[in-house]
Amino acid sequence: MKYTTLPHTDIEVSKICLGTMTWGRQNTEAEGHEQMDFALEKGVNFFDTAELYPVPAEADTYAETERIIGSWLKKKGNRKKVVLASKMAGKAEFTKHIRTTGFTRASIITAVEESLDRLQTDYIDLYQLHWPDRNTNYFGKRGYTHEISDHWQDNIHQILETLRDLVRAGKIRYVGISNETPWGAMRFLEESKVHAGLPRTITIQNPYSLLNRLFEIGLSEISIRENMGLLAYSPMAFGMLSGKYLGGMQPASSRVVLFPQFDRYSSEVANRATKRYYELAQQNDISLAQMSLAFVTSRPFVTSNIIGATTMNQLKENIASIDLELTDEVLAGIEIIHNEIPNPSP
Image 1: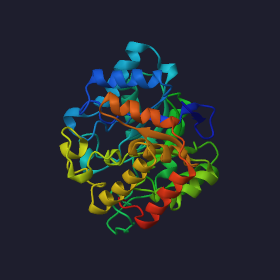
Image 2: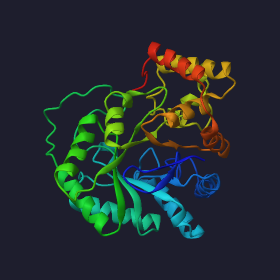
Image 3: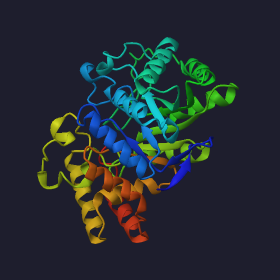
Image 4: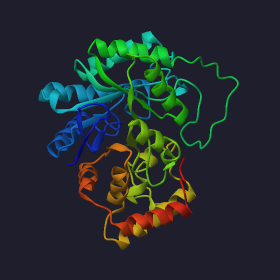
């Protein structure tokens, strides 16, 4: 395994982070425990979860993923071996079973305390806001359209004040953001610069893959210049970059088959790009999955690459991608495809 540190901290984390959002729905508690056992054995010490998980978000499975992690931590007694990240859900149509408020002081405190209880731990190493309070660009949408009906009042100072108090109380250690825009990222950073004592956002968790490199437009410069590391999620584009959907294949129990609403990486253009990447991998005797993951892990703005798997074979292949060094020839081939079919899946 390879390691780095969370920006502005001395916390060492693996360059591969274990994603958990299928546990409690596509994976059982026992399977989640097995994945954590194997990942830790292979040197993965960074786990990412969220109160929203598993997905799709529904009331009857709400927060099952955190509970599964909590039962594992209690059984193994190895909390200090794991760097644990979680996220607070924002206001949305699909989160009304969680809460109907946004990031108010009371809701943030309640969310943290309830996550701590489910996770059976006294502290969360990295606590993230799952998506912005305000209306902005969403999954599958390329640009920003200002909505006059958006009555959001800038509450970023109040959010950071509340998170500061939770840091002081020892309930969380550091703060991150997720699904943010360049404007939002800089607002959080500038607020903590102007007002001494407010916690700095040290990471941003956004989608990044061969099919979606939009992070490179604006956010990558912020990430490097401000040392705010990307925790890249969906590096396999919902499994599209495994190649298992090529040629119209529909594997049973796969996410896109089970949940057809998750179609952001399934367009004709995305399929065409995936086929090109698959051919490039084949020409260089490497798997498409490992090529895709190795590319993400190697980017200078990526702190850790969040992988997810529903089977142990997938998990083993994904973790093993850390040992793949892409040649200049492969990297050049990736850029040729990207320039011809840029970002087919926003």
